Image (tube, rainbow over all chains, first blue to last red):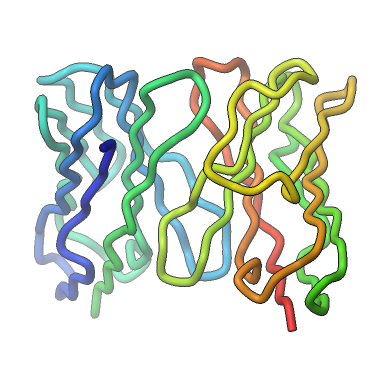
Length: 109
Length: 112
């Protein structure tokens, strides 16, 4: 069965304390892994797409990496404005994205 | 460039009623996908429309139906509302079926 698991469920960091979020997946025929950021009561905001193992992408303090079984979202020196829920999703056909339940990140000053 | 917009923002209905939610795609996008997001969960795929045709459907009953118009805007209709239908309904558009999906702000539906 296709499955996406994110860990940890929640993460509390001090401002400047770097960490990583994990997304593990069991999907046959992966056609892309996506990271989104979601603020409370709002729609997900697109961050990255990764297509093949070994691929990396960066945006400001965020860096996403992909292996054959999992993806990591590394957050370097986070700021309070990075607080949000980070969602991982995979696509195996051209239609649906299969989402994990997300990691709720809180960054304290 | 205008992003994905959805209306209404919030909606309260009673069990058994019917509801229509609307979505305007980002300019130039021909694909629209609808998702349901319960509190504390990730979005769940309802269905996708590509060039006015349904292109895939998730595990939702037939009382969830949709439509895509020639200008690529879309509607989600839910009949015979149930309490469990209370959720955030998200619309996402993409340039084409193989491209990234960009989400709207969502419609919060409460069923009493």
